[in-house]
Each structure stands twice: as C-alpha cells, then as structure tokens.
Length: 298
Image (cartoon, rainbow, N blue to C red; front, top):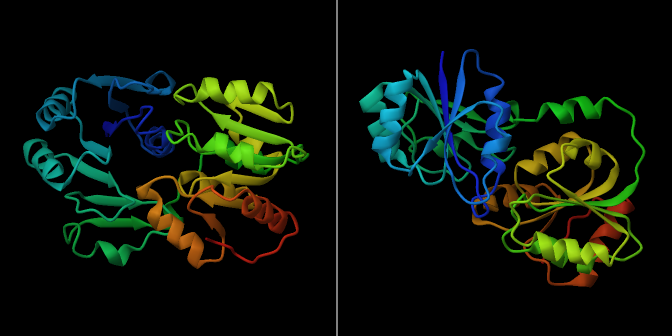
C-alpha cells in the first residue's frame, strides 16, 4: 500500500512532527512518500524518503497530489489541518486517513494516533467518527531505533546534565537554563541549525568549557545514555528519556505540551513551567542526583 505522510518542519513549527513520522514510516509496507512545504528552517534534506514539495497547505493541492500518486493511505501530522480539511480529502480521494493528535481536537479519520504516555482514549468519544480506530497511550509510543540499540550497550556517564529543548527552541530557553546551571557541571547541549539563537549559544559555549554543544547530532541516544540527568520539554523527548531510564526535569515551552505536562505532574515527575529561579533549578538537580522522588513545582 502506498502511503503519503503530510507533515511540516520549520524554525517555528519545530522538527518533532517529522522525527516521529520517520519512526512510524518504518512500520509501513510498500512505498512511503512525504508531502511538505519548503518552510524556513525545515529538515526536508534529512528525510530518507521521496519528498513532494507543496506550495501551500491548501486542501485542493493535497487532493491533487494524492490522486496523481494513487495513494491509498494518508498520514496527517499537522496542527494546521482540521476535521473539515480531512473530510474533504476523504470524500474526494477515498484514502484511509491516520491522523496524529496530542491536543484532543476533532478529526475525520479512520485511525487516530496519540502516542503520548498521557493519552486518554475516552476523551475522543465525541471527537472522531464512531468507526475510528483509537491508538492511544504507551502501547503505541514511537521510539527511534537508535535508542533501542543504545540501551543494550554499557555506557560511561561523562555528562552531568543533558539539555535538549527542541531543535528550534524559539524562546531561547536553552541559554536561560545554561546560565542557571552551576559551572562545575559537565553539560551536554543538543540543538540544530534550525535554531535561530544558535550563534548566541555558540558564543556562550565558547566562554564556558564545561559545556559541549552538539548541533544536528546523529548520536542523540548515545549522548543521553552518557548523561546522569536530562532537562527536556514535556514532548516526544520525554518518551525517549523514560525509555533510557535517565532521571529528568521537564520544562513546558508550548501550549501543545499541556497534556503531557499535567500527566507528569500528576505522576510525581519533576516539572517546571518556566526557568525564572536559579536556586530552584539547582535544588531540583540536587534532588534528582540524590534519587529523591519528591516532585516540586512552582
């Protein structure tokens, strides 16, 4: 069955949609094609499948592409595509639609995938067609193969803290975190060239030899495995950190992280909404290094 995956990446959208779609793509038999807009800061060049470039997010353009490719299955992973859009595609092409969702929106699809640990299938009762198959929760969590392979290896811990606040980090929170952390810690920082604040980060790291900055790294799993503690967003990265069994602090930076943030808070994990208190960040790190399970928030 030929599959078309509709998703975008950019310096504002982020890279997470494409990253999780690449994991899902490996589960499909038959040809897989991506359909993406050529937005600023995208990672289209990193997609190891054929990519069709869209001029816009117009429904008619996507319908025309589906018909020309004779696609049988469409994966939609896009906050800018809603139920009326999906319904129009379905009626015009007859494709089987699998829609990603992590914010409990209305969808017109055959399969709804919410692979977050926090996913609650009951909340979709009136949001999708009655015939829709719900795939929710940890049974459907998408973990990249590199993490599965890395976990089997023995590894020396060479970093005290691993910091990954998303490939784009539009709010430049990585720099705020680095300034809050004690200088005695060995810190591993992940980002990408899609980060508009990269020059500022590079300049800061130059003056702080305890920080190793990794840009567009192909060894994310290894770097995480080499770290004693992680500071990440309550997003897809949390799944990978939990899988690798690395203690972590999750800092919310976007509205679409609200559900995972609340889940982590309710289950006693260390979470923050903002980085505004140096002493508190330092205290949380001390708590985690001493394996204290108490969860703090402010």
